[in-house]
Image 1 (spheres, chains in turn brown, blue):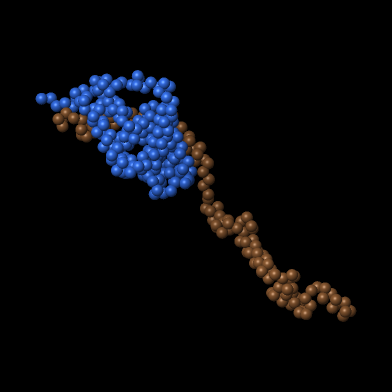
Image 2 (cartoon, each protein chain N blue to C red; image 1 turned 90 degrees about the horizontal axis):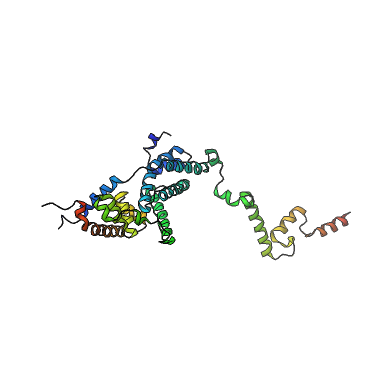
Length: 127
Length: 193
């Protein structure tokens, strides 16, 4: 019975016969077509050279590029901080701000005069 | 680079060279991979013209993915088999959608199992017997016995488990034996007493 059945060993013979009989050749035109595709697609690849890689900005620079790079980001941050201080200070003018008032006083050298009009009146009286 | 030098490179190295613009790497890869892709497609589709189209399409996908190929993720040949199997499956599905009345009358053109066996053409008999099996059993048997892939590789190509592949192969072999055993006399496998 076992000898007459097509068992695994006999199936293996079938597969061996089939492999031997299979056509392994295929048209040269297919190889040519495939190589033509490779040439066409390969031509589209951009291979960056070493200098280009070296000049490529890092990710931080790329991130801030739309706002002028890292310098632009610092400037934006500084102005945002000033705006925050002014906003939170609730001052009606610059001289009411704790820090700004002191700074302006240094420049005007008149800590008692807090507005440009006061300074003007003082100068007119002096003259 | 010379082709004989390139033959020492593995598929992955060749694909990396191609991505850097080395066309001779494409030639080496084509010589290595195209015959097996074409053979698989021809066996699945049983149509030389369609097999050529599938092989070309699969290779185009390989060329396109070359710059993004991530080393060590998959074997290129296994990936290519999977692409080819998917392309063939799509074509087989389209054939079924076309309908039997519009499909080429292959049954009339090809010899029956009986006539093939009478001619003692075991190869043809085997192909005809395999054609009677469910599609996934056919594919598993083709990949195992003709493409000589391992079970884990077949599992990767078929996107299933190794156990499922073993089951498909087992059922496929049993079904083949059932189809071929009654014809053993014509096959020349009966022991003479």
